[in-house]
Length: 394
Image: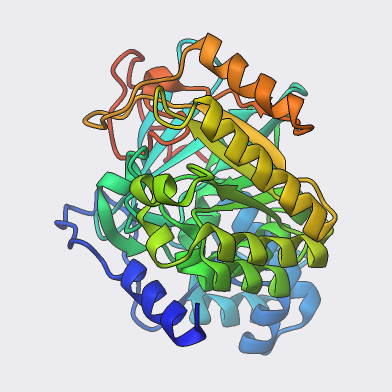
């Protein structure tokens, strides 16, 4: 595809499908017109823009991410003039915890945040194997324009992009509620939206997440998952090369993929995999291929053979094997699909093994509160009780 055609296709993908109806701000701090959200700034940026010492900037950034606010008075370690300069320059907006749903079947927690304009953002806290370690699945947009048929968010249309601070704040807010001794070990951009359709803000957020004075998350533990925007994949590799890449494959057969993932009309899987190969060479990370299994649709022998052939060809060309993650489809209301049977899943994996392609089956937790892969679309929990918001507790 020519660069001009790719840019045109990407602009089409970014076009909002609908305008979200505004709702009351629910006491969320409104954005002052003349100041800047501080959650999206690195210490060096804050120091340069406010004319303060870098040591003061680091300590103030730490205050913002630890407490969700600036200190009322300058502590002994921060110059009063520095605090005054930063207070005049920026502010610390917030996302209100409007909903919190704890799964009754596993330790997943889904958060629903409300922004000042009424936008609703869903985020998932994911427990890791080591006790006290968590990953956070963040959203990058309100809704999504790509309309993948098996995904609830894709049925919403795109409302708007999230700002960098709104992406960062999801992680900070979840971290603030962790049990004593808990910490956020990683972040996965697999919530609402296509991250690479909002790539500049996503990269800005990643840089803050990896900053020692801010969230201090190793960028090698951050994964950006995409339906396939080649220019965004290349930009990710160029600007934050330590970050890992995830690709939603959908189906390895072009005509079938196009049916469930309309983005394939603009960016073919061939083009996407070339960009992914370039990313792997630059980053040193094998890409994760996410394959959502749909009963009697993409879980048969032909589909498995096609996927195995793609994986082998990728490894031969780029010298790295993709990490294949099979995801049994999670129910989305109104979608014309069913979950693959356990027998179909095992038969699919057997064909992959016979062709020398390894795979894992991803556990998607929180299904009872619509927190599992593909289910984020502002749907209230049906089986778990709604808990009172604790966002005012500091």
